[in-house]
Image (cartoon, rainbow, N blue to C red; front, side):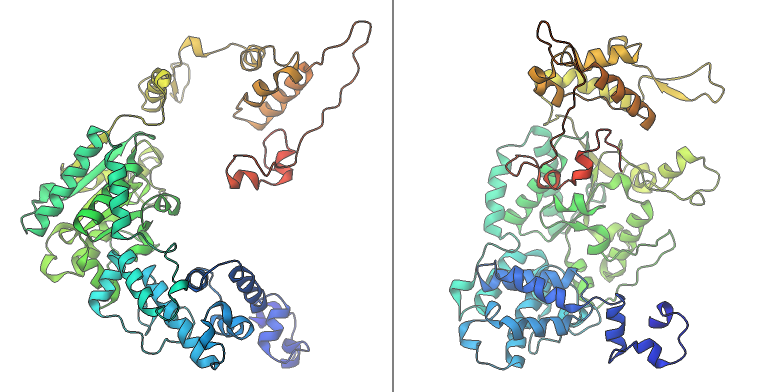
Amino acid sequence: MLLLHVRGPTGWQDLYAGHQTFVDAAKALGLIEDSTIWVNTILEALSGLPTFRRRLNWVAVLFATAGILDASSVLDRVLQDSRSLLTPRAMLHQGLDVVRQYVLTRMELVFRLHGVDPGTFKSSCERLGLPNPIGFIMPNEDIIEAEFNAGDYGQRMWSELMQDQPDQNDTADGPMTKEQYAAKDADFSAKMNAKQLSFIEAVCASVDARRKNNLEPSKQLFMLTGDGGTGKTFTYNALIAKLKAQRSCRLIATASTGIAAELLFEGATLHSKLRVPLDIDEGTLPMLDYESDSAKILRALEVLIIDEISITDKNVVLYVDKLLRSIDVERKDKQFGEKIVIFGGDWKQLLPVAESSAAPGLDNVNRSYWLSVKTTHWFCNGQVNIHRLTTNMRVLGDQEDYRRLLKTWGTGVTVRASATDDRRRPYVQLEPSLCVNTEQALIEHVFGNALVDPLSNIEQLRGSAILCPLNKDTFKMNTEIMSRILLPVRPGEQRTEQVYLSVDTVDPDSPMDILALNVADRYIENIYGKTP
């Protein structure tokens, strides 16, 4: 590493650069992170958490996700500086080795409950660069229960591990228990419409049939689709709650993206949960060890949800099919290893990203569609039970006509081919009532008389905007709008130049989302909305 960054070294001393070790030299050059910042961050965060369990949870999640290079050293420094934050009072006089094992055992439990697979290592701790917790063993049945019933399993294990400090066993953190899922199920059931109920009942019937070993292939695959706002995510979570609460179903909920996965109960990305390689094609073969913990979990799996399927490369789904067959010898000849698979999403949204060489002979328009899951034999042969949600839960009653109009544009109903364009580019034909002929007319339509007396029409101005496709149009429109802003002039006074000051201080009491509140000042000061 130093040889790549130190210019013209003639000997080892040039690499040491006055430091005792190569590691110290690399830290001085910023090539390796200094663990001190991690130690200080952890200590500061732990001081604000009320119980041992919450602190241990927080530390474990940090080590699992932050990629700390010298994890073992960082943990030891935290325990040396402030062991009272992670251990009970009775252990304050114990040696570092005893305290370390106390913490590692509990961190290992957190890792397992959050799906950190040891892989070829002895433990999840060892995989993350931490010492191996001595004596921590998870039987096969515990591995499966920790995956599919993490809430109740975690509560039971934490009660055993924290029996010396029951007041520190804070149950606020962690996955939901069966009791909590039952409460969610009761809440969801009262809010679902007929089509949502029909979908959930169909899936539950297939789960029951599978447990009786009489599941028909025609009732194994499902697709939940619908426009944005029809309640697809709501329905997934309602299904998860019902299957967990009433059937203790072994279910994994995934999505193509992390943001979509966060919206699902115990959701995760498909790639992380099923160990799907990032670089994949139709010939990629599963490499999961048959005796690994992940394989044991997938063999026990009953239901798999894959949300946002429209942007998923079909090779990923084909790989999942091969994977689920490969880890279950008894079901290797059945699609998806006879797991019930639920696809979800809206086909009108983004298609997979396609490279030019992905589909020889296809034009740019069709390459992405060729990679879509919709072109697989399951969809082409009608093997997927499609349930379509149609009631838009976000649209108010008086907005329904406008929603339908937007849908006609989005689905191409009003698209026409231009006869005057040699390239025959399609265009969307809008209703005449929605069009204006000049930029001046557009400004008048959007802002009306508010520009004449802006101080009296602040709310109207705040809620009005013109979206321009090009930056040059943005500058032009803003210049025209600013020239129209006038303040009332008293009789006998002459109109003079007026200077307007922008308010660029974020209101901490605003009901806006926290991410919106954290916007940088330079963005607020930029009236064009253009990235500086």
